Amino acid sequence: MGGIRASCRWLECVVLVILLFGRVVCGKTNISNQWKWNILLNNTGVVAMHMAVTHDDNVVIFDQTSAGPSEYRLRNCKAHGSGDSSCYAHSVEYNVLKNKVRAMHLATDTWCSSGSFLSNGSLLQTGGNGLGSRRIRSYRPCANSRCDWMELKRQLTVRRWYSSSLYLPRENGVIVVGGKGEFSYEFVPKASDSSKPYDLPFLHRTYEPNSKGNNLYPFLHLSTDGHLFIFANRDSILFDYKRHKVVKTFPTIPGHGGRSYPSSGSSVMLPLDHNNNFTKVEIMVCGGAARGSYRAARRGNYLPALKSCGRMVITGDQHRWRMETMPGPRLMSDMLILPTGDILIINGAKRGCAGWGSASSPAFEPYLYKPNRKSGNRFQILKPTKIARLYHSSAVLLPDGRILVAGGNPNSEYITHGVAHPTELRLQALIPDYMNTGFDHLRPQNVTIVYPQDATGVANGNTFGLTFRVGSGLNNMSVVAYAPPFTTHSSSMNQRMVRLECLSTEVSGEDTVATVMVPHSIHVAPPGFYMLTVVNGGIPSRSSWVRIL
Image 1 (spheres, rainbow, N blue to C red):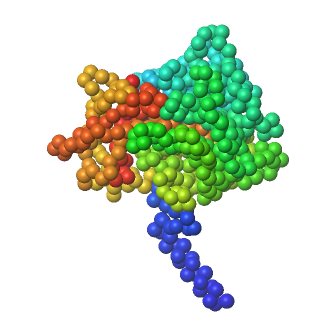
Image 2: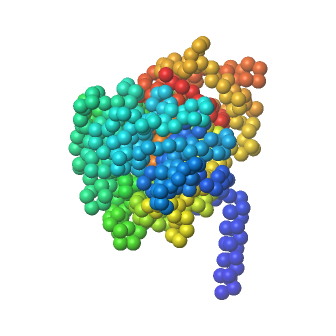
Image 3: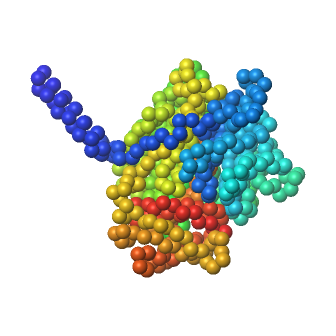
């Protein structure tokens, strides 16, 4: 017995050393505590059901208007009873530099709606619940901090609740797909006032009536050939939206469970790369709920979530899912592409499914996935948060490199006590380890974009100038352009990263001057605002905004 106790004490010492030094390989999962968490605000006032970063470095945060009073009461307003929500904000704009929020006005209910950025930087927001289910809204960033939501006169053709949207560069509009009880898609703007929605048999085929659909909030990605990758439940297609025709039907992703709402896995398109002329398009889908989770959760039984991720190349002729195992089960997570090309998996739960009170066991530890490592050695567990980010939470990447994390409300109203998981209004930042000042000698500084003379942006197929400073010289330098997403319900709509071609670099005094090429195809780099980042030796710069015209 004494030998056993000695061995246990020795093991405890080893564990302590591991915790102190922050890194260990346990099996094949790398654990890192070098990332840091900061609380930015104790109360944003509004749950971050939806969140998006705009090109003026502000963040739009909004919830549903039907949740009753929020925690942001408007001034000079008289409520008519305790349940009147008209005197409370349901949307705020977060000023990153000032670390403050200001209220904005939503006229109709945005509960479980969708959104996409247009080429001019406006956020086009579609659907919702009740009177908001057919509404189209627009938010255009402005310099005077007086911009607000605008409700457009035209409406969607049908109710779109739990639908997804994707920006279409050729049309400079969006396609809106699916929704509760809707198995169709439509375009905004419409071809005419009499335009009807287009039926999508794929949505009928993936529908599970006993699981609240399991094909809501389908994952949408624009391939470099201009076709749409659409994933719902466990299946996926490549779709020619101009001819309303399925181009490819892909294999079913392995695993016994769903990946779309309310099973709520998450998806990302891995970075596109000029080195292969943007011909390789690879989709990744992670997590989700076990089969029968929705019905089990109604009975108070929260089944373990899925642990699997699948990657599939959708270009070429050979298509199969290559499966991997996450460090733990997960659903309702956000997947974000970092400037390094790594994928951050954050927020969510380990059991149950999406919906009011339908999940348990919060997933406190983010995962970092390194797609270029060998299979089996790609996942890293990051330092955990102490805040549960369950249903209706979101995360976005900021230009300064931090990840903004907010929201979480498994309750149908704002409830601050007396429940297992109260409404969460704290705003956090997750700080990557590569932002440590110890890497400043590698970090590109003073990144400045130089457009062609008198231009306000750069067109596809053209070049622009880039200047920056690096203390220790260039080391495997790359330039990436990142289209920030609209995030809601584990879906990062329109998220996209493109590795640009650097045609030349030369040193001029303390500066490095580079000439960078924008991809020729609008289907590789659709017009709009991108966060442009210079990565040197694996260390990213602060991002600057570049506009592709």
